[in-house]
Image 1 (cartoon, rainbow, N blue to C red):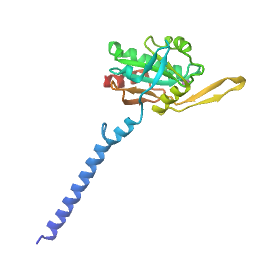
Image 2 (cartoon, rainbow, N blue to C red):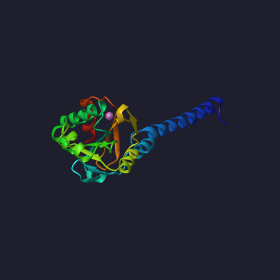
Image 3 (tube, rainbow, N blue to C red):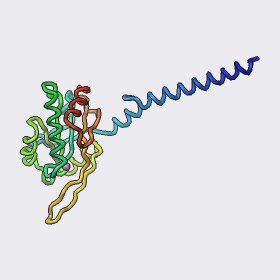
Image 4 (cartoon, rainbow, N blue to C red):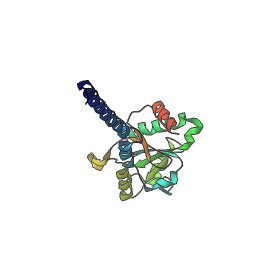
Length: 199
Ligand code: NI
């Protein structure tokens, strides 16, 4: 027979064990590399087949072995795109020699106007190693879908238009898988620090 004290201690012990196990499972589930992280990671990125500023077909797998720093935008963008591309270029340069292991990539969401020729001049003004990609409407749509990038045409007066688009910078690993993303306005030094940790 157990005394009331022994019984209370036993119940308390079992309760504490259940609580600890639950906590451990929760921490593991939410930890980097844990199941929740895997779900998030698996859903961003993937293959794309596009054309670069020199007219050459480029696929995501062409960049295996390097980290990819990817931004979706368009060359006629009045402000946000140039700022983000400038930040990417500066972040890569801040890494010095190691920055060569990072491939900065710009993917247009406006293939109608952003031809390879248009992209060549634009890319040059940001970084000598920036790969700028365009393609058919379908190819661009597929790439944007893979990265969960939203974009839409916003007509202006006189037949012109702007493109609304989400503005995250994605960092992909050497195996092409999603590592992290940067929100608009991230300072270049912060971006460089975060990339360096993943190199
Ligand atoms: Ni833009």
